[in-house]
Amino acid sequence: MTPRLRIQSVIVTPVLVWDDGEELTPGPELGQISLTLSNLPMFAEGLPAEVAALAARLAEGASPVPGQAD
Image (tube, rainbow, N blue to C red):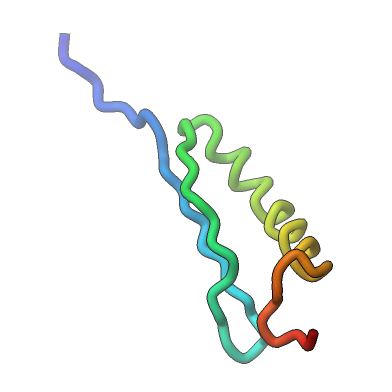
């Protein structure tokens, strides 16, 4: 029997930036996540909502947001 080459997992590292309309500055760092191929679509679908929730938490004062006054 000939072995089959298969994807075991995909490693994703989202890279966030702050966009003030003129420049992009580095955003909060997120760690890597290892996903099975079948879980990748669900992760990708939910990522925008997770980023929006993170931005809201940061805007509430969890961490400074570049370009915002104290």
